[in-house]
Structures are given as structure tokens and as C-alpha cells.
Length: 138
Image 1 (cartoon, rainbow, N blue to C red):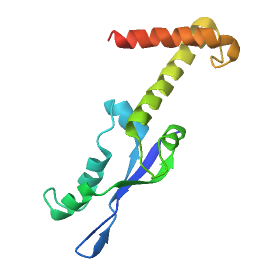
Image 2: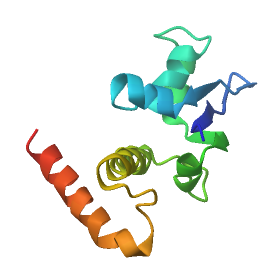
Image 3: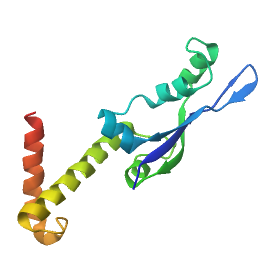
Image 4: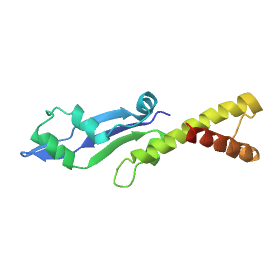
């Protein structure tokens, strides 16, 4: 499932309410760049306000709100205040990508179709350890 979020900043300036919002495909962003740029900065950049405007200054001081969340990992990374924890998301997303790779290796090399099966727990742990070790040496 694709991980997508809508992020917005609600604020008032000179008596006018504003709610600039963007939609971010987290999977595409991480696959393309290997990181998630500042969500706040993405909303500010996508807004109709100039780079050096008073509205931008107000936006930068207001909290981010996550209004739409889809995707298993993204949903797990929203707290009760509707704050999106991007560090947690990146960690869980990388673990999911690792598991996909490990399942592929287990199926191809060991003829194991379900690496999450309890009978293969030791093999999965060994593969995770090997993967982790290889990442530390890069």
C-alpha cells in the first residue's frame, strides 16, 4: 500500500484564514531521494505566498497538521495530535524495504516462501543480522 499524507498549516493573517496544504507520496519521495525533506518547508514553498513575506513568517511559527493519511506505515506514525513523525516513518519504511529484499532472497536461495513463519524465525534473524552488518560497513 502506498504511503501518502496531506499536510497543512492553518493560520490567520490580517483577519484572513489560510490553510495551505500539500499531498506527499512518501514512498516516491524516499525512493527518489533517500530522505524526507522538511514537511513544513514543502508546505511553505508550495503556498501562494512569497519567499520573504509576513505570511511565510507566520506559517513557519504555526504547527503542522496531518489531515489525510493512507498507508500502513504512515498511519502508524501519526500521534494523537495529528503530528507526523517522519523519523519513525523513515525507520519503519526502511525496515519494510529490507524485509521485502530478505523475503526475495529467502525464496530464491532457500526456497522459503514465508520468512515470517515461526519455523523460519532463526533464518530471518540471521538474514537481518547479515543485512544490518552489511549496512554498517557501507
